[in-house]
Amino acid sequence: MIKLEQVLHRVQKPARYVGGEWNAVYKDWEKTAVKVAFAFPDVYEVGMSHLGLQILYHVVNSREDALMERTFAPWVDMEQEMRSRGIPLFTLESRRPVADFDILAFTLQYEMTFTNILNMLDLAGIPLRSEQRGSEHPLVIAGGPCAFNPEPLASFMDLFVIGEGEEVFNELLDLYLELGGQRAGRRHFLRRAAEIAGIYVPSLYRVEYHSDGTLAAVEPVEDGVPPKVTKRVIRNFDRAPFPVKPLVPYLGVVHDRGMLEVQRGCTRGCRFCQAGVIYRPVREKSPDTLIRQANEIVKHTGYDEISLVSLSTADYSRVQEVVRTLLDQLGDMGVSVSLPSLRVDAFSVALAREVQRVRRASLTFAPEAGTQRLRDVINKGVTEEDLMEAVSAAFAAGWPAIKLYFMIGLPSEREEDLEGIAGLARRVLARGKELGVPGNRLKVTVSVSSFVPKSHTPFQWEPQLEMDELRRRQALLRGMLKQKGLVFHWHEVETSFLEAVLARGDRRLDRALEEAWRLGCRFDGWSECFDFARWKEAFRVAGLDPAWYAYRRYAYDDLLPWDHIEAGVSRKYLVLEHKRALEGKATPDCRTGRCPGCGLCPTLEIEPEVLDRTKGVCG
Image 1 (cartoon, rainbow, N blue to C red):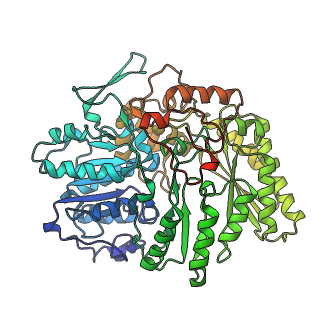
Image 2: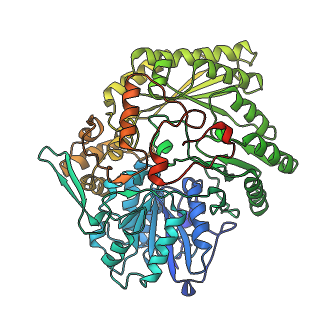
Image 3: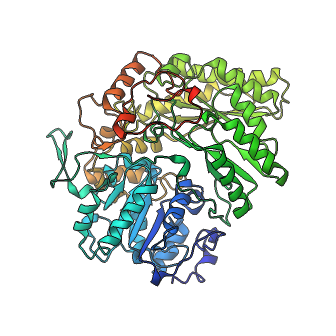
């Protein structure tokens, strides 16, 4: 067990490293057959806000033959102390070195955490590359949204879980126990693991390139290894395992509240949105299940807020019923209900007004683009009238501040689309004044990010706009939004550029990733740590041009680095959606309209699980 007493007083936020939280699970190490360390490659406060951690912690620790403990990326001060004192990466529950575990499981939520993964492996004393590990080392695995293009990390991972992990994780543990751990041989285990649906083992695939550097082939090297790995999806979502005794952190975290997953998936079909593809189809939980789970969470945690979590909670077909019942049962105890995602419509505001009668939070709407033409291009399905109705309802209901979220650099964006963002913000501000919001409280915040093309979306073929042009557009907006009551926030273009490189990258990026880590890159998603100069040097040493990845426009017949990963939505449909985008044509929401034919339901042999069938389903 690691001794931390001489270290904790020397670092910021020592509570990040001590564990001991309410509902933490402690098992007898010697009596448990397989040990898993869940690794979140960011600080404790971020990782403990992640629902997926809580779900897998519950899934594994519900087994008598397995345990799961947690480890997080140590902040720079703690890393310095650990390296100077020879303290290896350890878990919070038992304070055992991560290298003692059988499996080290990373979650891939954001490309800018990739160097943290290498740093955590090194701190654990585990060789960075899969080919360098032997039977004495843990299996290093990863899953999550970034696993849908696993190639930049392929050299560092023994295997990836593609899709939802609740069932496949159990199957992986069963195989591990069946084979007696790694005693059968590391390669034999990985070969057998590749037979599990949803498991991708990079070492079992050969990658070839054309002379011009473009991808020529990604092919299995052995018979029986699937040429494509299809994502796993949970069926009968109402009965899916869910933690009603979640870990309660001592330290204030990003989302410090009870989380209740009301549905999984989204039918909106925004063309830039990867989550809308990889979490299809929509599956809803029943109100009875949700009410029971919410009451159990409050009972076992003492939380005074329950957050209804999904990609689009207001689309859940029984949301009003669930909100009303939760407030009736829990409101008198001072427990509030919150909606982290709102549609841009008055219904959402009315719902927010209802749920936040106990405690009021801020409201954020995401028009994404400044003109109707561009909103049709991205298939946002929102009009200016929708937005003005929503903000009018919000101001009338007592909200003095509104946040608006947009993207710049979207395909086909023009200068008038930027002017549209500023004009929309000014009209929202004016509406607040018309409705009598006091001037000293009235605020409209415009937050702008840069478009990053992602795999498995209709915009996967599109390049990212060059950094200089993104800076110019940010400067234009900054000038247009100089007005009392308007606040402008933007993302640094260098970070967005690197995100695009890693999101669209192939296996050759491993050289740049490792070099960037050796040059000291850590916490690249944190502005105080991000050092673009080090990254540029890393690409130079690796002999790679990052612009080739971020700024390249793919052709429809190009082989993409992620084409061997099957998300369920057909390539034919993505091409059709891309063409419709360029024509400015919208595609209706499959929940309320005719099935657009994305191909997911027949490919995965699954149907949406929607409670109110009158609202339409894919078919």
